[in-house]
Structure formats: C-alpha cells, structure tokens
Length: 156
Image (cartoon, rainbow, N blue to C red; front, top):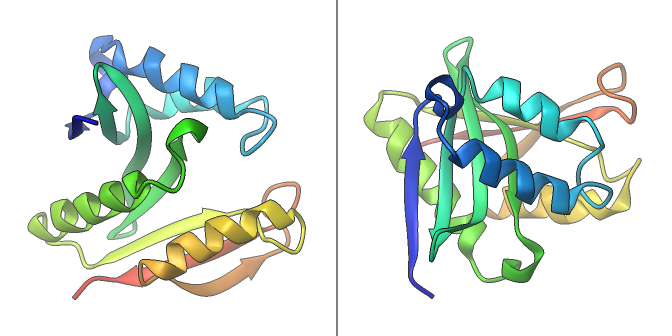
C-alpha cells in the first residue's frame, strides 16, 4: 500500500473535496463508532479545525481532526476505514501529529472519548490512546449522553 500522511489546514473553508471523503468514511462508521449527527457536525468543525489524513491511491484510509484549545492540542475526532484496522495507520497518524504539534511549540494533547463502562467497544479506543502514551485524566458524567473520558498526553 502506497500510504501518505497529509495535513489539511481548515479544509472546508475553501471547499476542499477532502471534506466529502471524510464524510463518506464517517458515514461508513456510523452506527459502529459514531452517532448519526457526527458527519454533519464534522463538516462544520472542518471550517475551523485542521485535519491529518492517511491516504492511499486517492482514498482516505484514516483521519484525525484537531484544534487548539486553552493552549493544548485537542483531538476532535479520529477514524479509520474498517478495512485498514490493525495495520498501524492510526498509529502513524498520531505519531505525525506528535511531531507536527511539537514543531509548533505545543507539548500537551487532549482527547475525549466514550467511556468503556457505557459502551464496551470503546475499550479498544482507550487502549489505543494509552498505547501511545495517553493517560486517563478525568471522567465526566455530565458530558455527552454516555459520559466522557478525558485522556492526556504530555509530549517529550
């Protein structure tokens, strides 16, 4: 597989077709990882947030949406085409993000996700982030329908 990692800065602002590719991937993951409203919300988010994509032969195999909040990088959404799960593509995206944000002077990355206690499938998500040095910092019962787990990584 000929894989490239590409950075798109606020892609939807200029009508970049990458937004449509991300939406297609989100739609394929709806009902498994994402709720029905995620695709529409992400289209809006991409007007103000940046995007890293793993692409192969013109197809998006994995994506990571991120922004800055309170002096830290926040991962808003990450997803991988199920056909490419467990091939290290998500790890490559995260490592690329780590290098990118270190060059920009950031040293903290935050991600919120669904707690495995409310949706066991998300144990995989938490383990993925923990494998990359993230640590569970807080749980919020009042955020989202099922609560939220906040994971934080401090970059070296």
